[in-house]
Figure 1 (cartoon, rainbow over the protein chains, first blue to last red):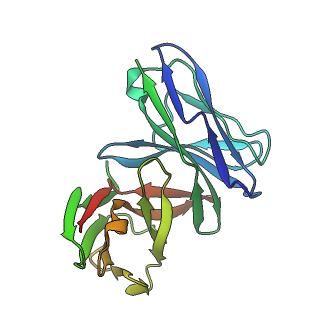
Figure 2: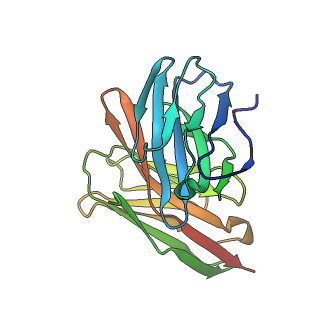
Length: 110
Length: 114
């Protein structure tokens, strides 16, 4: 039982490149979300999904896309990376009150 | 606009002392207030949580105090230990049209000196 698995753990991108951050869960939770963590700002919600085929925007969605074709997977796409997207990204699943976070992806955009 | 304000940003406490972290919120639609603990290189993990109809919740050395009228809540760590050194986040949840959103405070880096 792996919980929430995020890949890759580290990534360096050049400005303008695109990439997909992967998130997979084996807990059969319907609700999944993506957060970014920046110093002094806590975690901010990027996008979330209440189930397969349903996604919505959070606080800071600009520059990011998501899709949810299965319950297990919730990838986050950066369409054209910018230095402002340098951050640590966390995926989470939710059942009731409990949020389970992955171990994060540290992304640097140069 | 920070919906949940957390202080202090950093805190140093001697081993055996009491660590206190404070949070304040504005939105009365929040219905659940968790605290998360995060170690370097790891994701946040739920530590303890409280509902707004309760004024205090204690789990071992960790206590949440909740003041609904003041819209403030705090985390107290009694007998603080070096293993408690981590970053702590308060959060507040609101439900919107079948979904739920968790809003985090800015975080407090806690260091417990041996």
